[in-house]
Amino acid sequence: MGFALSEMRLTTSAFEPGGAIPAKYTGDAEDVSPALSWTDVPEGTNSFALICHDPDAPLVKPGSYGFVHWVLYGIPGHISELAEGVADYVPGVNDFGNQGYGGPAPPPGHGTHHYFFWLLALDSELDLPPGLTLWELLAKLEPSIIGMNRLMGTYSRS
Image 1 (tube, one colour):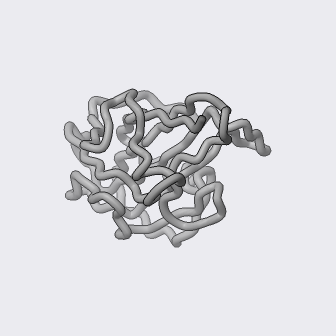
Image 2 (cartoon, helix red, strand yellow):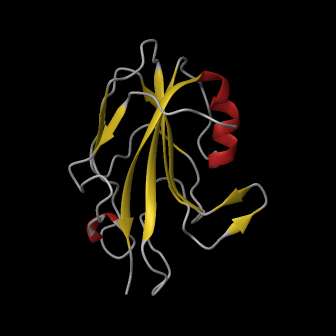
């Protein structure tokens, strides 16, 4: 499964692209999702999905690597932002085993981890049940993805 980045832009007021994610958005504090917004959506977008993934996590599972922190889908195509701590739309299962957002929480002393927030633009509105994993979701979305881009932030524990 390979995809090319589109012109769509994903931003947040919580941190600079490539910058440190404030503790508020991590497992060390309030553990709420950051506010996100996007522009330059591909024509024909009918819905969105969002994923947060840490490829630096020292985990390898069959067909996967890293750690999934957030899987969210069923976001209507007319939406262009998510509020901090959003509880709307359809939650998938993260690698903590929970539905919804689970913020950065790398092992202490493991160095700086990179957290990629991926926004996927879809040409259809898929009626999917809650609780899909990242890989289950991607398998269902693949034929409908017409654009994607990412925002990366970092976090580390001493």
